[in-house]
Image (tube, rainbow, N blue to C red; front, side, top):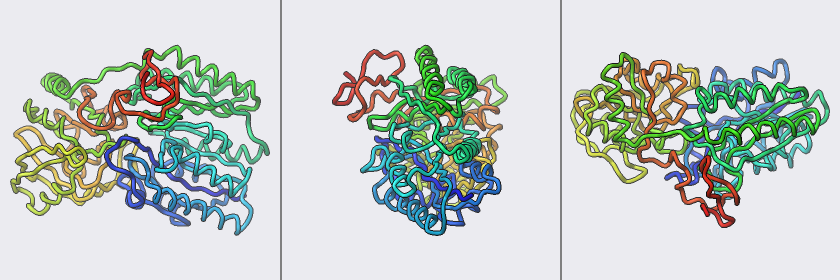
Length: 503
């Protein structure tokens, strides 16, 4: 048996300040860079990426490597990048078929990618793959922030999103997609499927599966997926920053019969609709969140963690806005550490000055034009390379470029890096000499992923709405291409009109 494997992962924010280039896939910050052919296997070995789990689950099956890549979330993928990378995948697939028959294909995808010329980038990639392989069995793994589309569902035999956010089961999802591919090959025919889309969005900050409301929703999903005949119930929370018709919450059920698939899908849809109100959660403005963090830290013996959700590099932020940092300085937040500010120019200035130097910096603000003037003492310098150790990034190579730890006031320190990366792993701080558990306040550029590694050491977790493009309330963004009838907040009676925007 021969199965081709590859992947192309990106989460695209239509309103992010910077586009995603081909170079961003070649040199990725927190995962292996673009790789093709046999080198793919070694590149993903020991990492947490889904294709690593798929390769392991394949057992003794002969695997044919295509190409695989990931780039940090940002603006839409430039056409050059999409055409070059999809060309690599399709070219390798064609050569694999020239070498002999294939029994199936597995692809590691994200599901929320937007290219300049293709709003449903994964749907277009799958169209091209189908044009090459015909009706060959094909399964995919997905990030649950996928904006699942009918075109994607029609072109695959099974789609398997992760079950967790933070995503600590990426390998498990890849393994499940491979198991379903092997089952589909043995079955000899596709399963019945039922695809559904909800008419309201779930905010990113309400999607964490560690806590309610999403924890109990995922428990219910598990029960429905265990029903007789059901092979998979793939729930995609949506990534509500992509300006195209299919953006939002969707899911697909696969089963032995159409009646079983419809029953699972309809049951899950009814459950989500009944719990809509529970997805409304509060975030605090920067001044209030810092004041609360200082108050809580007074009597705490563990860090108070602040999530700087709106500048989350994992959602399309550049990781360089300074609103929360400025408030920490203004309120003299003793023992606070900010991870991170993505500013290669400032990092380079720190390296040129050396440890112990005091220099003036226009820190951050490269994406929004609002830097913060600081007098900084350089406390430590690194090349920015480390290996993830936490539940989500264990074994993944981290590279944030030349980095510096600076003190910008008597109580506030900042990790300055040259490449953006979401602050989701303690190794990011430890690699420059900061022990996270010893900090009084940790301000992290992240929305939810930080919880996997930082929540266990936190005395409290607060979510801040400070400047950045990954807005806690996406309904404020200037959407133009959403489908009619979609509501951009839970329990909001306003709907998108046919021309886009809220009516």
